[in-house]
Length: 280
Image (cartoon, rainbow, N blue to C red; front, side, top):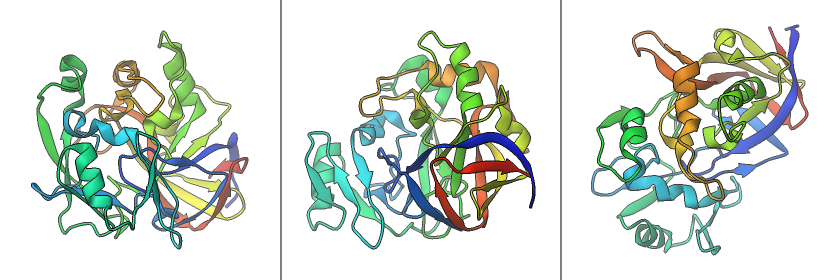
């Protein structure tokens, strides 16, 4: 596949070993059919409902974004707690510890339950009423694009600096931090605007081997507005795309605020920060 240079290079590479916890910034990674090695391989299940725990329901689970997970097989995932202590995901006491800190009975698992679902608060309602308010919540199924993982829809999520910069033009505090949108790849582009919208159905070659196929723009939930570790709450991280890039990501979903794009892996490969990016 030959192509045109669309953005220069990969500038950030991220992995999120436990769903809805903070992730880790990488220099290089292996990317296979199930995405970045070790990405979203673990999640918490709420024992009372059987649902996957997700910060998409911020009233109940926003504190997940005060925990950070790092590592991948063959080594254990390690969790850094809000107080700075660390615990292994394989520790016999990890469920009790996380349940106590989250004030809810949870189980850490690497096996998605059959028909796995999570609760997703209506984003606009969270903006209007605040993160602690009781708002309408939809039950959303997890995608099945990568069996044995906890992805919402697809195994790779990417975002461009063009999109972040376009949002920043409208925000009083400037360009939003990429990690609010939880991408795997941040791609520097020389274009302007929401360029990922035009990549749907096309392929990206990253570095020498990795090839991705862009599936759809990424509809946004309330998560980018929440505090992420050191980052404070930022409601404009959702309000801005709601004003500037409200589109229909897939037929039948209606017009939704979108930032970034979902992709599937066509050809596995290694990726590193600085890798060149080409569009077919």
